[in-house]
Image (tube, rainbow, N blue to C red; front, top):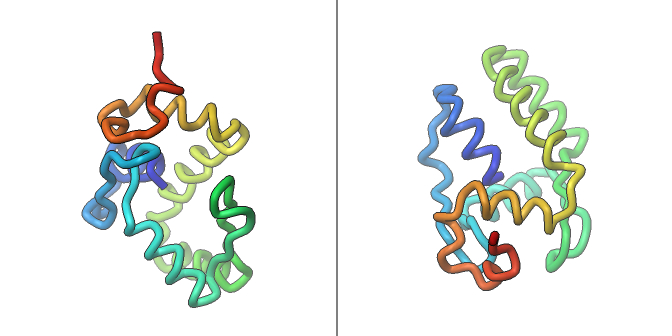
Length: 126
């Protein structure tokens, strides 16, 4: 979500409100409780499910009901297709790399979010 927020919402200036997510430096890098709240709400409404270990790597998947909701939204708001294309691009770009590689890239690209990190030294660049 952090990379989508930074690269789609902020950098592309697509007219999406960026006030929803306020990421801050935290124990393992960029963090906001808002994402956790949204995951809980989407799960509660049966639009999304999570797989995997909460303390390791989790996958977040749309349910069939969630896919239907996305498709209905895209049908009624065609301009959002560009947003979905960018999200797909980011997912494709980062979805195949290891968590360690992903964290390393985020730490290099956005060092202002590493101030409070407990793992910063592990990813320090020389």
